[in-house]
Length: 355
Image: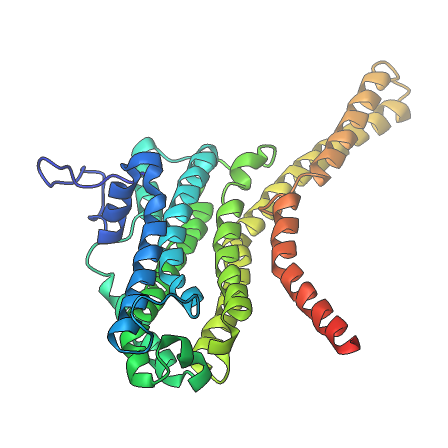
């Protein structure tokens, strides 16, 4: 995170900051000051959850003291994943804003404010998504089948002790991620709407947010596929969890497309303006050429013809200008990442039925 935070000495905020940062943003700021950028912290968080998992199993008598097992470990990964993913996406968003700067047309102060709003969650509101995530977590655990509860103690009561904290952490962080996703993608739409210096010939700023929306979208799709492949037992008959998995895929695709649709319309308008300008000049040159021919005033006809050829070449060049706000390689990469696991799944099922 690179958004400004309260100063250590005074606890005050810079005047350009519209609201104080959330506890999560302050946590990320502290993590970034650690060696190697602090990314190893998320591995430690997962390790701590694995340790709690085993201690809880031992304490409830579900496993012999000192025994180790990998059963159910994948279910502990969601909280650390979303915690790390939000941190990573914040960095992507910051780089996207820097790339978009030339197209924004904003003053330095206005741009700094919009950047802060894109990257930073408001303080004092994290409890809302955490509460919603906790409700979903409890419903998911209570709906789990006996087979799904086996790695967490076997009985529902024991599983609530062993797994509920990890479930609350996972669903809670997922809810926070969803909130931040909605906020960020809305801000992307607003930034595109308010930009005053869009240039079709400068594709860097136009494509600036495509990698952000791709990373956000793939983040949700990855969660759904990971859940389907690595934690399939927990999904059997578990309506809340299945609904969350299906929603993750739908949201992932929407995250990539919807926020960029507005600027596609603006780019089409810009391209239309350029085409109309070329056509107006082509008509004027055509009329001048006809006038000279009709009046036998052939002096300068070559110049008019050459200019007309240049105008036509310019029109062809304008026709090739992109109006979609993502490079082709980004679009191909996103579609491949979404469809490839489905294709592999279908092929493996088909091969399995042939055996």
